[in-house]
Length: 291
View: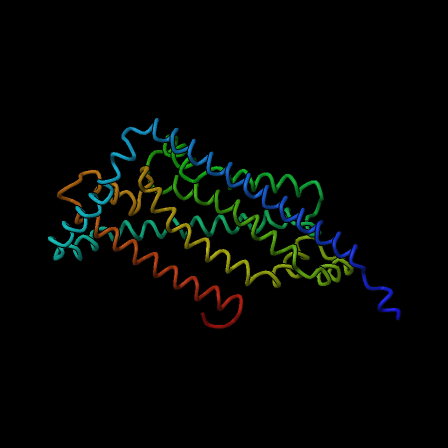
């Protein structure tokens, strides 16, 4: 009898159904308005880009495959020379990898230190948290290519501007990722160390870093893979490495497309190797297993 008395009546069920349908109609209305706004922005943005473009998108669309076709045909014609081209640009590839490695190391170390000042419950002073987080946001917001162009203007072309630019962006990204990992760390070891008079640096070194080290290393390896691509791209603006060689080969156009194809193949193989290697290493660090 109690269950029957407690069960809702038809009027209550009808009211719940009406409320649900009204809520569903409201969600569909908002979704439709958002979709219409997105489509309108896409159309307006395309028209603005079309008006400011040096050529025309519609008129140039039929020629979109001309460049890849020329590269492939010339590479196939001179395929016997591709291994020689790859060997010639191999030092530039090593320079690109070195840029990525050094910038990742510097950026990850800076991100590790900054993340401890940006983590709630771990920072030595609460006012440091928003300051370091806004600094991290700024470092991530400025693209590497912008920083590299400014540094090239100041320091001249070469790998050093690229390394500094990528390291700054890496520090911003690693600060955010590392702080999110550190927020999930168990604070009991930290509290135990604090109770026996350990300094802040000792609490971080002995109580926090052993817990988060696998995830920190995993993110650093992933960032190294990203930085290999970034260092290759920065070569186009005079920062050295294999990107510089690729820009020269593409600038000369027909007659050197085989060199561009060789660089494309070498860069693709390098990225695949680092992608697979970093994926395997991340799985070993985080899960202790195989991919």
